[in-house]
Image 1 (cartoon, rainbow, N blue to C red):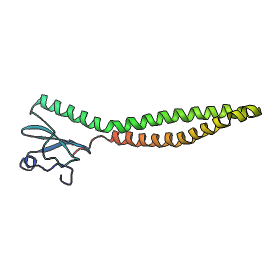
Image 2 (cartoon, helix red, strand yellow; image 1 turned 135 degrees about the horizontal axis):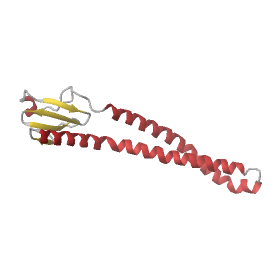
Image 3 (tube, rainbow, N blue to C red; image 1 turned 180 degrees about the vertical axis):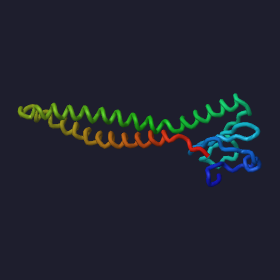
Image 4 (spheres, rainbow, N blue to C red; image 1 turned 135 degrees about the vertical axis):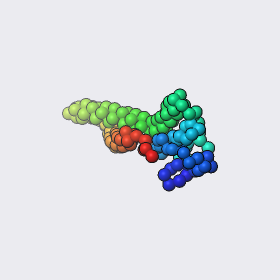
Length: 154
């Protein structure tokens, strides 16, 4: 792989008409007189992972495959961060409501004694859910912004 992230292979180096159409961290879509090729940029492979013929149909298939591969490799961290943030926020909200309800019963001594272990566990949940919500929300935001940048053009 060269400094620009273009895989080095005998077929690319011996083809003066090779053109990088689009690339990202993991894949590169290239074009030459034989058609379109998709390469992995994060490995040392010297062969393309997919090739497509010259023409409109080959072009459409190459772009669709490139976009599908690029999206599939980027979407799972975004989805995971989103669900961690949602579940943690739900737990944080419920534990806050439960804590408020249990503290409202402090004027009755028997409720306080029987509820003390519940209050402790709810506070543990609340203490863990808050940083998870904020952290996953920040991770989701960063991944979302990174994804919106789109692939780099060479």
